[in-house]
Length: 294
View 1 (cartoon, rainbow, N blue to C red):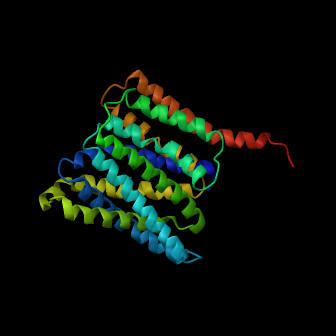
View 2 (tube, rainbow, N blue to C red):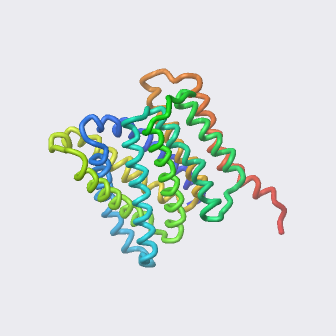
């Protein structure tokens, strides 16, 4: 797979996430956040499992103990991101949440520099700045007063950055995107259901009321989109992946605009995010072509 094809897969994953936002928010009317997270990722695990078995039969190398530990660590990062975002939404606005979550486009290259000792291509920095500015404009160009939910969402952005970075580096080593996906889903489901059983009341009628949203988000936003993310990240860098995945906000805003008018700032935000994706995709290739042969 080429880098262009990989980034298009990431763009498709972001589009699915953007489309699933409504289902995520409406489900909270019937069920608590941890029950929702646990059940959606349990569905995702079951949806991906048959493909994992097929992948295992064709794999040339077995998953090592080190890789298994990395899979679990990625699952814990996924759980941390999903939990802090969902709980944070209870005390912050959707506008603040969408913008603050998008800060992972800055955190990912910072993690690459300070922890992995890998400097991303210079174009990532202006690209990340354009993406964050675009998300801000999509959010209306203003933020409400900061709340505890906003602080949780900052933590959420850090968890997403860790998940994106670890998923990208790990799948490049193992070549087992489906095994990684199923493991991170299962870890997230177990952690969320354990917390839900301890702190959240639930009833069968509540689960039935939220079942359409749980199935939709579990199969598509979790199962399909996260698998596309992991597959795409095998052929691109974590920093580029973060910028393409941040277009989730673009797709969410565009779908919302179908039922309401988007302000001028929203269109400006869409344009900035689109430019950011073009820049990080085209500039590295152009600069390589201009380098003299050695």
